[in-house]
Image 1 (spheres, helix red, strand yellow):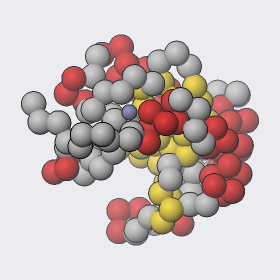
Image 2: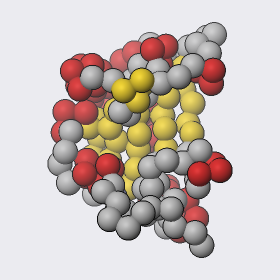
Image 3: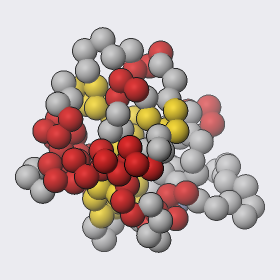
Amino acid sequence: MNHYAPVGYVCPLCRIVAGAERDAVVYRDEVVVAALSLHQKANNLGSLLVFPSEHIENLYTAPSEKLNSMFSVSRRLALALKHSLGAEGVTLLQNNEPAGGQDVWHIHAHVIPRYRDDQYFSRRGQIASIDDRERIAKKVRSALEAV
Ligand SMILES: [Zn+2]
């Protein structure tokens, strides 16, 4: 099995698990964490990442119970995006290996708020400011309490 993380890789998702970017975190339990993505697309603000707190590179070696948690937390996140941001739909994406579009070497799923004609797949993302991420995270966190 190929591993793509370079020697000395500083994993951005492990940093979040360890307490970085606390204000961008929307959900945390013993198994998984969810936070606002660093990259956001203008028509889809509020895109989230959900990932296990344990460092696992990709889908191929992830234990089922962690995948199950990622999926059931994704369900709650999807509802929270609908309630807090008025998403008309939600897309889940999970990429593996460079050919599969993976560029962070810690398994994660994207939970993306979608709107009619939002052109999600043809638009480029930009790094969102921490202020924007915190502002949106706050809305999603309060909606999560209700789902
Ligand atoms: Zn990691």
